Amino acid sequence: MSDFHPPSPDPAEQELGHTFRPKFDVAGLLTAVAVDDASGEILMLAHMNAEALAATIRTGEAHYFSRSRGRLWKKGETSGQIQTVRSIAVDCDQDALILRVAVGGDGGACHTGARSCFFRTLQPDGTLGEP
Amino acid sequence: MSDFHPPSPDPAEQELGHTFRPKFDVAGLLTAVAVDDASGEILMLAHMNAEALAATIRTGEAHYFSRSRGRLWKKGETSGQIQTVRSIAVDCDQDALILRVAVGGDGGACHTGARSCFFRTLQPDGTLGEP
Image (tube, rainbow over all chains, first blue to last red):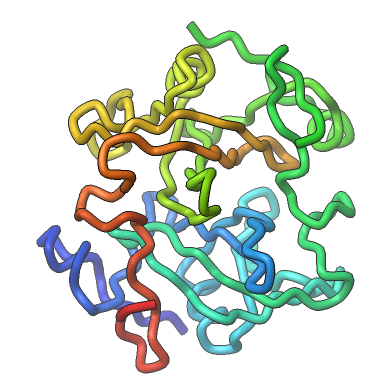
């Protein structure tokens, strides 16, 4: 199901090597940022366990692990906002991923109806407002 | 030091309201993605506790919480890669932030010397290579 190489104790291997060694945290999760491949817009941030990562790689469609629901979750399974993965970038210590995706359905990613989950910006007065 | 409103039990208030209610996880952290404000490139992903978030807002320079070192960390304190914050976007459930930043020093963000921490991409053969 999910047969990844373990993280290396050697920082040079982990951070500069060519072996994919995803580093899951104590909860068994890593962080994934989904970016619209066409526009470069950051759509959402979510988490993956090993099963979600393996399913994403195997199917080419983004799967996440819902921390609130405690289960694997294929993005778009109910909304139609399927995320077809164009590329997966890995950060230096391999505990975070950027997925560049093409989005199905209405092209959005947020359950609120917004295109991106990041639709509010912190204002100088400390409230949230439009970007 | 850090006096934020607590998350609301009302999803509509948390997800659509105008009150900043940062939602820290069980470890007291939320996730921050730093983006180069000029280019839109994702530079790094890191975590903030309430103290780091408060310091970031107060100083206008990005502070994070290092999970490996277990301490507050001002980005660039040794490298000179200070991140001056241009804007902070908040996601729907308020557990993730996007910081658009101008980077000091050599303009990079990764301790490996790369500009972005996401300098490797998963290849079709399962190894990591150039984007």
